[in-house]
Amino acid sequence: MNPYVLATLLFSLGLGTTLTFASSHWLLAWMGLEINTLAIMPLMAQHHHPRAVEATTKYFLTQATAAATILFASTTNAWIMGEWDINNLAHPLASTMIIIALALKIGLAPMHFWMPEVLQGLDLLTGLILSTWQKLAPFALIIQVAPTIDPTLLTSLGLLSTLIGGWGGLNQTQLRKILAYSSIAHMGWMIIILQYAPHLTLIALGTYIFMTSAAFLTLKMASATKINTLTTTWSKSPILATTTALALLSLGGLPPLTGFMPKWLILQELTKQEIPLTATIMALAALLSLYFYLRLCYAMTLTISPSTTNNTTPWRTQTTQMTLPLAISTMTTLTLLPITPAITALTT
Image (cartoon, rainbow, N blue to C red; front, side, top):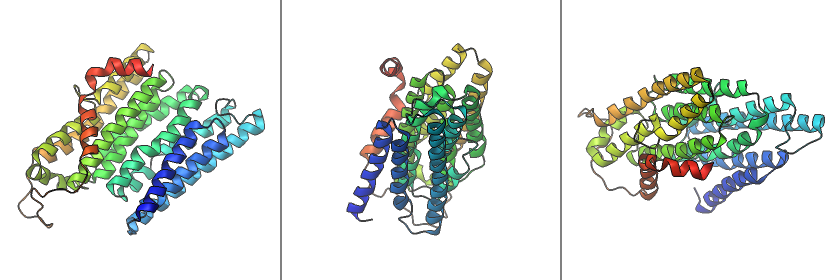
């Protein structure tokens, strides 16, 4: 892709998210979401592969549906209440429609069906943008409207997302689909705690972005898109295989890695709010996700690739990719747990 075109698209991505962050009016927020959607679509379709074009089409249709619903709900709220302000979403019909549309935007269950299919059709870097940056603008709106949403609806969305994100990833062999289901499960953790402690949602979102970035950048470095491709990683780069296994365990939420921090704080808060049943279901759903991360770790570190491979053997070739973003995201994925008190103090 032409560097000027790429720079324009990336600038538009930043502009759309910033516009939604800064807006207090529904029309401006909607405009930011639309700029975001339109800016990422050329990046998604840049390889002109039928799978990429199909993924772009599916993404456009779901995002356009969500945007139209947001516009309709905000217009309905303005018509009934006489208010366009985001914080004055007083009518229950409008607030329910808004949260369902935003859930569709970020891929919360049961509006998640587009997410694995779309991610599977993209290259790893565009998939990384879709899984991290594209969540920020809708999440900013969700956090603002959360006080007006029915708590039962938020809890249901959160529980369904963690369960479906765990179950859906169990039988997958494609790494991008596994990461899509991982994303759905993490979104569920963020939504479930939103009504009780919004700062924990921000902590969970931040750690999720670092962990997912580490996972995608590692797969990009290893040129891996299927589980059986991972089996050659240990022979090519033992250190990369080790850090990747730890990053995947961090995504699963094992101590003493960074991924344990949001799960621990969220379960603690749910117990404080005297809803132990929800906390128990969330903890058990985390085990489902942990299983498929362990599958990836097993394939990467405890199995040796068969000697007959169809592709050219890339043993210990020098990489031309940038390694600094991977190093930074991996370090944050593995080492932030000891400074949990400082992080919670900064966000509350």
